[in-house]
Image (tube, rainbow, N blue to C red):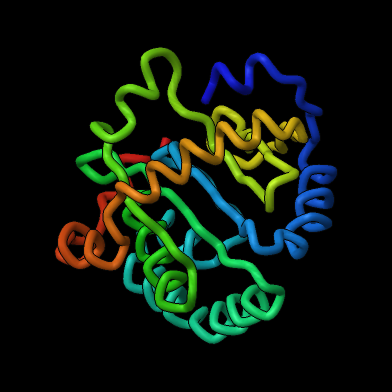
Length: 207
């Protein structure tokens, strides 16, 4: 996947331009749907109340705030369905599960219950794809737009690189589809590996 992107020309979009462009295309994904590959194990999401609670060590509040978003996500995925497409995600999970990822998997579990289609893969599933650098963070809208999502060194969203080459999009989508097909459904993974975990040791991730 890295090689496919390296051989293509993408337009670098700073954060505001990326968010605007993404939103312009998202609701027109059509039958090809929306596909996302998440590889990094830790991000920062300042401004997200449940993440803020998790980051300051209030795990109970973080989970409560996630639960309170159910109505929002039910409406959101109903709107997606009304626009005629689905939202599909492949989430790479390393073991042991990082504190951030433990929080995110609770959020993704709620999203799955509301209509998102998420599969989990491990390092063994992507080993042949990572002979060099780690896989990038990818979002594909329909069959015409691909974004390599860019984060800064602290894990904050910093923008994206937009690709419109149909061959590059098809190749990256094929890889994501293959991982999705072989991955474990999030619901079963969550019940088996995430639900039993104690509250994450947040102090290990704070500098």
